[in-house]
Image 1 (cartoon, helix red, strand yellow):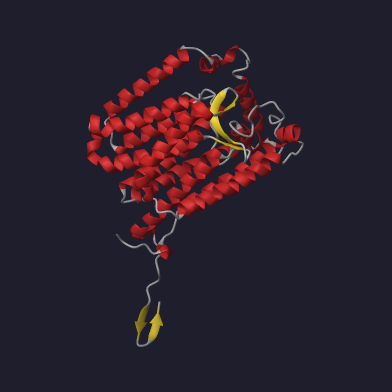
Image 2: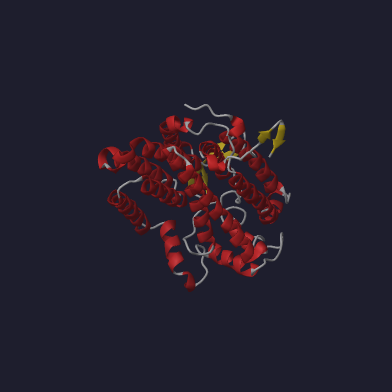
Amino acid sequence: MRKLNPAQMECDKRILLIVVILLAVGASLVASSSSYFSTAKFSDPYFLLKRHLVRMLIAGLFLILAMHIDYRIFRKLSPVALTVGIAMLVGLLIFGHAIRDTMRWYHVRFLQVTFQPSEMARLSLVLFLAYWVARKGESLQDFKSGFLPPAAAIVAVLGLMAAQPNYGSASATAIIAFLMLYLGGVRIRHLTVLGLSVAGVALLRVISGGYVRERIVAYFNRSEGIGDMNWQLYQSLVGLGSGGPLGLGFGESRQKLNWLPDSHTDFIFSILGEEAGLIGTLLVSLLFLLLVLRALKISTNSGDKFGQMLVIGIGCSIFVYAMLNMSVATGLFPVTGLPLPFLSYGGSALVVNAFSVGILLNVSKRTSLSNPSRRRRRPLRVYVKGERCV
């Protein structure tokens, strides 16, 4: 194996810059959107902002750590990571911490923190699918030996997420997993069978009743009035519409004044639209698009199949979560509890996404070494009769 010289390795600075910008925008939005809630509950307008900044610091450390770990080590660890991720989801059914009638979190009492294992399970599934596609190659098209094992892993992760219940994460994870298998070379008919099976189970869950059915009904009957289930969507649209093209200005949001629930978490995109206007939302959307395009560029330049699929999975993860969150805020998708990557207040998603970007940057470092066109060219020096000419 060729020994890598760290001085020759260069990560994709564009992706790093995009993430830093998103983090900065997120911090400013959390400062604005959480101020009223922090004052009312903790008598400190900056209480949640302080916690978010600490989590940003931790996320940055995880990003740097992952950026300096050879990504190929995750190829060997991916089956173990998937096992741990599934075990943590199973543990929620026994030891989970309930918030709003859902068991999505573990609560570490002596640290007074909670974390959401579905984020880690999503990343572990991405690692496993990248490993499996790279390992199987052409035999991935065989149903029994190539397709069935990753399909079983996907069903296990989705089923445990839905059991919390966490249908938003399950939906996003399903889209990410299907994209990875499709791009990895799985037969369309195999994916179709899996997709119809998952959709059939989801439909039965909706028909059976509960809050999921209420949200779906509210989604298709938004014109009949403002109820509890579509209150968030209505207030979200009010915020986006109030912002106009240029926005009301930083800190001038009215929806954060207890009109829009979860304004600093799931609906922070609405606060962005209210304060920065249509221009602000378009610029943030463009940043997510550029990030996934850069990830795809790194994937095409990588000569390692595992690295290719890993970058695709990470890029798709961030982009899918962003698009679903924005779709919820704009009424294009039923309300789910999905954060906006790097912008929403929270710890689990922020740290996992930062660690994922660190892995992506590590792949880009090794791609830059193997791809001469990305290396910095040195000027040619010619010596003539003892004199140096450039």
